[in-house]
Length: 268
Ligand SMILES: [Fe+2]
Ligand SMILES: [Fe+2]
Image (cartoon, rainbow, N blue to C red; front, side, top):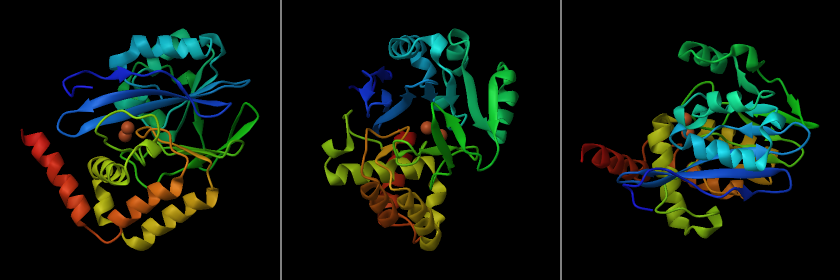
């Protein structure tokens, strides 16, 4: 993929019997490529998790339609209202008459401020409310880092799937199908590079606070980690080890190097 190319939609990727990833890849000049993922849960109440890039809207909606009949789509879990997550909500609601957006109070408020959304098709979850769909229970999860305060990940009890929204995203040299295909250094640099751009406040976080957040995730013992910006991953500990080594003591050389790359890229 040339960095001058536009974003590209890739083929759906099966995570397990219930979950499918709908991946796309966004070139980031000077920094590599960024995965931009949505996920689809099959079952009695199919649920789409985030809605992809509007630059790919026709292709995305067509690919979604090959995975689920639009009239069967029941829920759209919206992690947050950034363009790379909310990009195709309107278009999908247009073709999926029985779909309802799931978000929280701030997410719905931001949709209201943007205008153009039918808020009668938005289900607002209370803090800590457990959402139930397709005979599954979804516990809201605040990821250890994020770029918008409404960010709402989840833990799917049935398949032990952790959806981490922007957290654990990685800028990578080229598209790959799973993190196991990446050399350790490439994964580390990708995770630190993305997190230092997306959540620069991590550089100020204390080790104890970061450790508590990571421990809470480990206590869930997920079988799969679905990130909006990472290829398929099954091993949470590999991801958190890279993050806790890079952060938790103020600025580190890792963060400084990644930040310098971002600044250089922005100035050229
Ligand atoms: Fe974001
Ligand atoms: Fe994002």
